[in-house]
Amino acid sequence: AAAAAAAATATAATVSALPTTLPLPPEAAAVAESLATDVAGHCSMAPVLQARTSPVLTPRQHEQLSPCTPNRLSGGGRAPHTEDDSGLSDDSFANSPQPMALAMASITTRMRRQSSGLVFNPGPATVVECVRSPGKAERRFSVATGAGGKQTLMPAEVEVPEQVQEIEAVSGQPPTEAASIEEVVEQAQESPLESPSEVFARFLSSDSTEQVYSSFGQLLCLCKEAEADGRIASSTTGQAAAEDTLVPPYCRFRGVLGGALPWRARSVWTLLDTRLHRPEYTAAPLKGKRAVICGAGPCGIRTALELAMLHADVTVLEKRAPADACGRINRVHLWEWCKQDLLGWGAKIFDPPGGAFGGDNDFCHIGLGELQLLLLKNALLLGIRFLFLAEAVRVKDGELLLSDGRRIPCDTLVLASGANSQLSESVGLRSVALGLRGKGSAIGVVANFVHSRDARQMALRQFAWARQFNMPLFARLEKETAMDLENIVYYKGQSHHYMVMTPTKKSLLRAGVLREGRPAGKRLLHGSNVDVQRLGCMVQGIAAFFGLPTELCSTQGAMIFDFSGIRRLEAAATVVDGDVLVCAVGDSLLEPFWPEGLGIMRGFMSALDAAAAAVVAAEGG
Image (cartoon, rainbow, N blue to C red):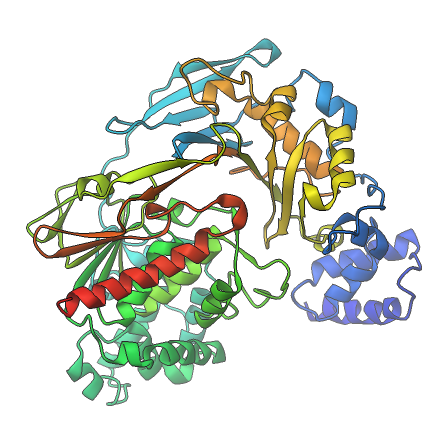
């Protein structure tokens, strides 16, 4: 690495002396690009190499392709295709009756706003459709694709996994029971330990739920060993512990391992201390109260954090498996208030999202999985318990009953499991549907493309366009791809390119994505009415038009959903079983109007409202 860095530095010094518009000879460009790829992340000159040896577009072409202001594309031409494009011509995309060269796919049907959302996974798995109906068990079908692209639904036998037992945290899996801190320590004792600095660095950079729990369990083991050996300052378990037995784990880490942890640990401690020392938290208004959160999505974990800082005993339930809980790769727009809130939770310290978070003021966004992992790490440091593969059924006798028969005492129950939560109905919170312009009038399509992180893709600029601000651009798009869009947004993530758009129903029918405009007795986006292979082909053609990569991610490659209606609860909170406060947050409370990017902002604010309601209830209000 040192030799490569030295070579890259020497090459970069030569390249830096060249004018930006002067092309390098092919051999020199190849060597420079290779060095930049090899030492990316190891040498500060690597970005310089990547910026100056991009073989695809000049800075002016980048500006025309991915504008930041509405008028930059009004007179510019289309950027040329490159050898990395899919090879689809504009006419062949619109007219070819053949499905794209992806033999198999995986479809997951999700109930959303009284309509389904289809997820196109262009991987090797068999095409499977999961149909969920209220009050009925999940049904699965395999989709056989015959000649001419005709698809037939066939029942598929799916094995139901056995109840997962408690898993050792340090083995790479989070526990499936709400284990105490001491139990997690005992589970981690058998694992070989690294130095505290290495373990904490791995905790900060963990990019999966399993890795987070593995590193967190090892940190707890290191603490226990240090405490057993007497290598602990008396102040760590002194007066503060005597006054409150729920000492957050980060306080133990600081007291026991403080000197052995990297500087970023001190930054995390400072951020958490700053929050916990605010007047509304130091009063500990929820001390001794038990709170249960149903749903480990961003809004659910954000609510758990707020309640924990108010000194409540918090447990989070998640019905999905640990590997699936934080696996969503779609990206969400962040308003300024949400951005500042996440910075206060260490968004630039934890990776993901990493030090580049919030660097682009025009396009501030974060992946859903990245957001969940950021909040999950903070939640573990504050002592919040998580219970995966657990689904709540109802409240009885001051306890929350789970589907497997377990009971969890609770004083406050927070619903954060989405718009179609059956638990909401069981506690008396009714939902109503609000239509916008009629069914099928607002259809969204999301696509995720592989990010190879080469010089060309790193240089791509993000953009957001609405038809009314650049009608010539959308006219050219329709002429070349036969797709009529109302708006389109492109975000560049760490590992993938994210594109979201709103095509018209008429153009989806013309492209063959929708088979019928009014399917008899079925939802518009029912699996039998959507050709998911043509959906993937459609988004590839649009990506090629804008000069973006066209290789779809193997999972969550392309998705289509109907947002022509929204659901909301008639009441935000209620009291059940005598004295159990029930609040709803996020989409469980109010589904946002999707194009406005309001989901996370309103969800976080509803989390603060729920915490405030819990304080009022605890005070007898």
